[in-house]
Each structure stands twice: as structure tokens, then as C-alpha cells.
Length: 227
Image (cartoon, one colour):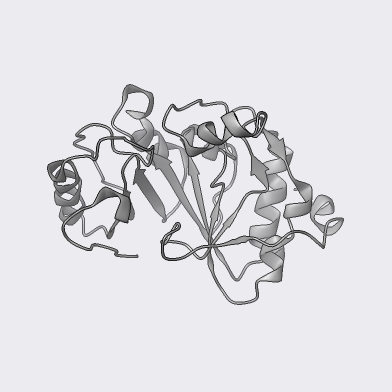
């Protein structure tokens, strides 16, 4: 583990507080590892790249490691909202440094990890206060992610983010403990039909899985369930 990197950076920037109008299923976002090479056309960071060239370049931010330590109240922290911290390009030592914070220095929190590369989870020991998630957007690029998630991580807390939901999917949610559904937030993007969410919800109910539907989906019912 890379605990020395953490201890050298005991002061850092504040995390981003979340809530209504933001990522409302978590309390904070934390990005010690930023950037991404997946180049998904709908990614909001890809839009920011046009304004701030280089923002998508993968980068480790050691000064941000201490951020969760400054929040004493147990919180839900989405770890990696502006990049994929489990991408194949990420140095294993940097992931170790992040996990050190979660398991040694700021154990009071619950950490949500999300990746389009769920196989990478298998390279590390699952942590008890972590939720391990992957994305299924309904396209070929993510069609095997749920299966890979269940095969790669020996954890009791797995979740799937169907955001943005670009096609109707009929997922197998066996082994999943939480589902998030959302739409493409790109300006002018077509909103997904209600029926697409209905299909996922029906499968989730089969396994008694809580469902959280983001406001951007414009679903007629308010469904915001947490495990």
C-alpha cells in the first residue's frame, strides 16, 4: 500500500458537496485520480475538454488524497466523478493510495466506485466500506460490464449505473445490490422512453434491488431508493 503518499499530503482542497440539482445519491464527489481515455461521446468531461484542453488527460492528484479526512461526519463519497480511477492506464500504486484513505485514514465514510473497466477491480482486495459499480449504457461498449463486475469483485455491495441509458436493455441483475438509472445530459439529447426504465425496474424488483432514478430521466414517478 502507498500510505506514505497519503501522510505526506495532510492538507488539500475541499471535496465537492453534492445534493439537489447535482449528484443527489451521494454527499460528496472525490477525484484523487482524474481523466479518462474511454472517450465516450456523451461524457460531460468530453464537453469540458473543448473549453479546457487537457482536462481529460489522466492525472493523479496526491494533494486531494486527504480530502475525506477533513469530513468527520460519515458520508457517501462518489470516488471518481470526473474520470475512471480503475482504467487500465491508472498506476496500481495510485489506486492503492486511494484505498489506503478509505480503509485506514477515513474509514467513517462509504465510497462509491464506478468504472467501465470492472475487470480491474479483481486486481485489488475489495474493501468493506466500498460500493463497486459499473456502467451499462445499452451499447456494445458496455454490454458485458455487469457480468464482469460480478466475476471480478468479491464484494457484497455491487451496483450498476444505467446512465446514460441509450437503448433498451434486459439486464441480468443477479448479484447486484443497487441500480441507478439516468439519461444523456448532453444539451438537445433525446430523453429515453419510460419503457426502458420500466424494463430495468421490473428486473430489479425481481431481486428486491433498490432503484434510484435521476431527475434527468424525467420519469413520471419519483423513485429514489437507497440500499
